[in-house]
Length: 322
Ligand code: AN0
Ligand code: CP
Image 1: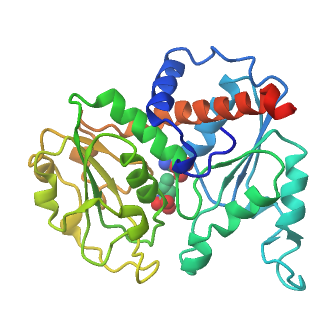
Image 2: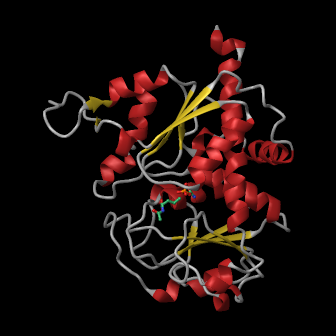
Image 3: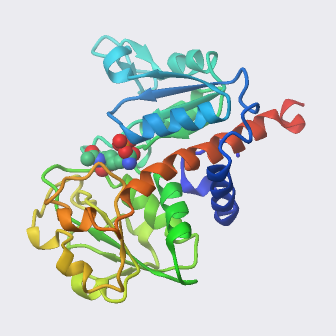
């Protein structure tokens, strides 16, 4: 693997999931692979799971880790080509990415969508600039339009918990007071399309995701109907895509409740976390034995570990050195 900034960097999802599950059983099996290798993680946004699970994954492989909350502690970066930098930004990403690359072997970046400029977000201004100017492989820790490490952890969790060959998986929008990015939902949709599942998305009208991503996926506007026979309910809020970045609805009727879960095939509940209790999901659902949220967070380590392992193996290969 040369980089991991999108689910499209996956060549065989089944292999990746199998190998991640093997790593989970034997996390220190490749503890020499990352010796004298460094992972730098740059955070433009907050994190609990991504930061700690990726650090742990790197440490399991014997890597050193350096972390920086770049929006608090770093210079304000410029991304525009040819700009006259006499305003807020002090350093261009061209230098920053090349400089940081000299301190590490893999560079991981978290840069959420701004949700004000659709074109800028969907062109992945920040992470693509790092991919362009960094001289080491780049990993996404959630970019403007995707959260591929989360999606991989979700695929691992699904593989471990499914009891039938082709389960019904429902991605359900749920209300939230703030405008949230599409990244988690986008990557989940993409990774569901890489496997054999009966996949349905349910959301209020107006909350359609990018049709380039949902092409061919069934959309059911009636949440109750979507939940029928479901084996997994994956919940996430996102803001509107068409009328970009807005909170159009906070309809409490879309919250995931125990009563709604009773209309499924005893479905497992999934959410990437962090989650607002009793806004997105009722306590009774997230605290139930069918809730997989803690397992999902655990699998973030092994999703990150398999990705870092594949990237290290690729950069160690004689072909690459030649
Ligand atoms: C972020 C989001 O929705 O993209 C991060 C999720 C992993 N969530 C919040 O900001 C609450
Ligand atoms: N799910 C997830 O990415 O969590 P954090 O934002 O806490 O990293």
